[in-house]
Length: 119
Image (cartoon, rainbow, N blue to C red; front, side, top):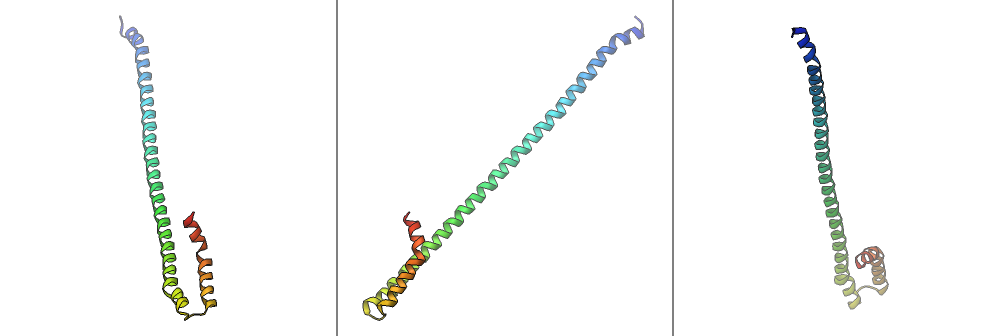
């Protein structure tokens, strides 16, 4: 066998091997790209979920604080009425019309809150 016939006989094998290695390399690069993109996407999703949960917790806390403040205001107004207006009514120190006006205003101011808490 001569060198050229040996070369001709091995050339198709080398050519196929080169294309196989080239194809495998391309597939590895594409697989790496897809895997990296998937991992980055998963991290982004986890970060967004964490931020969403933190925002929801903050909104819930703020809503609780607002409700606590409304309840405290309602209790303070009720205490003020009990300590002043009702005492003035019992002792006759304040005219009945003024007491009724105070109670009406308090009722108008706090009706939505009272109905909300009763609901």
